[in-house]
Image (cartoon, rainbow, N blue to C red; front, side, top):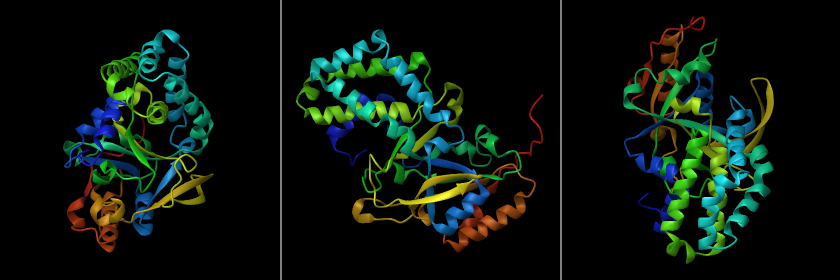
Length: 325
């Protein structure tokens, strides 16, 4: 975050403490991973683009409803939300009401017009096998791959894309309360700083706090996934870089937003081209892993990804015909 405006960094540390801490924990040597199908990896390599899918068409549409419902329950409970509201009102009267009003105004649009690219944190000890919890969607006749990528483009401060990464929260009810309690304490501790800011700027932070709490939360049972979501919304954050397209995916007609993987150094948008982005490809459970590896190595070489032979590995995880038991 060295390149960020210090005031912006401070605002994020106040209003999104867990997001701020998880973002700060990401280092230059860290890696993200995108679990997808081998067929989709070939499409990414051939087209040199990634697709942002509508949030309603993710593996489980409840992925976004969980956060929205949790937030609504918290907001409807005066005992739970009172400390945060009191802290804000003591700094800038009316800022909570304005931020909440903007969130409610945009809520229908957030549900219907949010587009997401999902990645997960990747550990070095997963370099050979990937993460078993994330292979589960690819065990029934579909070959999964884990595309390990550099974190640099995700962490770089740029508005060029109008797409914003955030870690997913796996909060229980108590953990959500604890998060907002931390926010309230930090608002109180930074009252002098916040009171001097433009009301519109603080209102926007309240809105973003609510937006990401709603859109980047999942059931606590999925915590092993350690997902991050790159979120865009063409109405809230219009972008000239995304290309809208209607397509049929898994038999479902839907709108997608395609992002060409092209750098734009003058906008501080770098590191998203294939030869810089791809660090490793792990092939998931498959009876044809050897042939798949040969094809992926050849395709990476075709796209000028350096040293493709060393970057593609077979997980060796056995193909499971049936569930446990």
